[in-house]
Length: 374
Image 1 (spheres, rainbow, N blue to C red):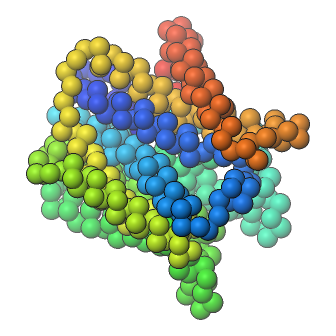
Image 2: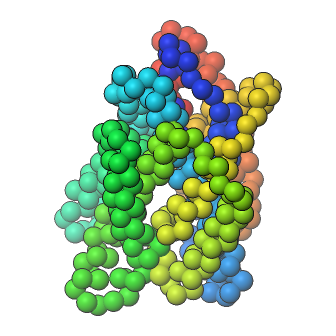
Image 3: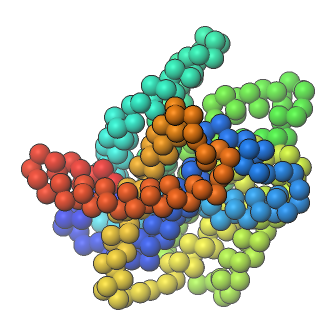
């Protein structure tokens, strides 16, 4: 999501404006995932178990959920592409990348302290004696407050994948990453296989996966970072009819989602088997697109910055919005979900304004750190 190497680096960077546009669109999709009020149920937002509803859910998940893997692949592609051009300094680039992610994590952690306090209070109130311990584990594992698991997962995955030195090693890493991803699928879209059974193995599997929220971690991320590195090493794959594979894999992904929903298997829609297939062909298609227009590049750079800022800021916007409305007893979005399109637009416009403001303020000596906040 966020390029870790400063643009003033001596090594000239290859620029891909189309990727910046894709990242901005992906950020808009991720915002949409998180707009619903906390505590909403399928009944309260008008969803039922009818076939048209399940088809609609499958299409929506199929459109929205690839956004996060796309961020992983693009971030890894840009980083490892840079490393390929200057292999002697690869740990310098990886170190700068992870430090940048750490700064982002801490910056938004501080801004999100009210969310952190509320989450800690929620875990502590469970009465099981391990609530706060679980919160600490999840914070280290997936990031807090909310939504910043991406930063943790990306840093861990990049560090691991960067250890691979040969193509053979990368193939072995891709196999291991695939196995971890499959395990992640059973802790996500297929967790219902274990939630509905009473045998000791199923109970333990469900308890561990649900308790540690394993679907939100680098079990999912590392495979997409590996894919990003493959693209960085060899560029896009010139597959005849690649666009057809994009469409076909999207349809099959929708069928998989429909089946998991209809058979009541889907618990979390974060990881499922055909997601990496679709994302691979989609990203391959994107990397085949070349646009040299200078005006497009200028707009794309701005959208990339706004997209990064939007990803990091939007959760706080919606959580605080719903807190205020709930406190006044007038959260109409719980009954009329379609009205969320208005605060959605407000959030996106606010991100444009705040990112522009941060960029302007970062020109001042004591506010330079703001340039690293998105």
